[in-house]
Length: 433
Ligand SMILES: [Zn+2]
Image (cartoon, rainbow, N blue to C red; front, side):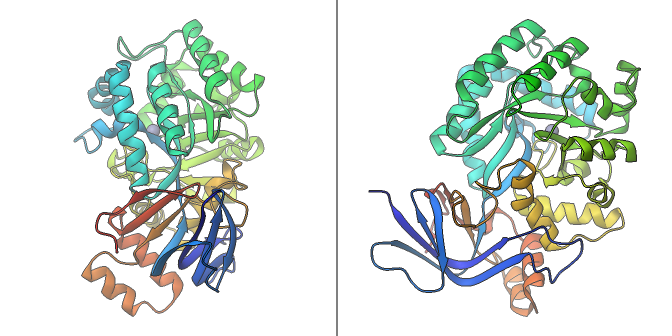
């Protein structure tokens, strides 16, 4: 018999995309002191009345229940270089990241870090992610296998990189294609796993490798594609030198057949209006990585212009360029980046982008991103406040938006009480009542 689980708390999710800056948005679904019923790993009902004794009850009165966060761009091997001092993107790759990624040729290392990484995501309230492992096939294997063991929704793929990278981190077109096809055959569409054709970024793939990646995408439109675009001005100049015929950095990917509705492009800071129009037409989305953009000094992402162009935006930690796996911290940084860019993001716009918005952009809203009946029970239970200062701030908050905005701005993973994945509790804070 499948477990029947009932979780009680203050339920918050979205039924539509909130309008920019609308703190009273009717798209917010707020159901305080409700029971969320889970059966067979899926949400089957939400109700105010307590269910009968056939349900295993988990009473979290006074706590916040949210859909699990979706981190749309993060690097599992870069836990080893998080919080590394003193560089911008291209330096940072050569000084810190590439040496660290070389370790993942070793299956034991790859497995240990995949386990550590996914458990860390769960301990930060993130239940689904779009992930870069390394160029090594074993690193993708380890990640898929560990995600399968945890029942997680994961999109990932072996990194493609056949030039401008050190020995031991380069593949070649023939071997890379063979590895991709093998990984796709074994992992794509298996349980909650999906394969992403994973181009690190334009400078580290030859045109021949980009063309191979494009062929894979064309052969199977259910595959995802993930890469980086227009993160840093020096990087943009380098791409222009390497691909003189392309109109723009983004155009390099379009020319090679890499842009479609399943493309997740990290950063997109230095795009122009023509690029944004192409993204809209092709249905590709941007993963906004505010912590990383601040830490590496990359620039201020133009959320307003991107949203106005009709391009989907999700939020991403981009660890290890980003300095925390916490999506609260990522959202708070997103607010600050947009404040510097001259706009103010509501708590609703931020929270939506890290849950329902990301799910929609990934074509997964039937499965994740909300507390809608029929979706998979990926959800988290949170304390409203984890410190005396945050408690005081919550006490004096005048409305729901103010409460949630303060929760985002003052909070982090220490507020997390429990993480549920497909109706199974996968993380529980020590000493929880
Ligand atoms: Zn990245």
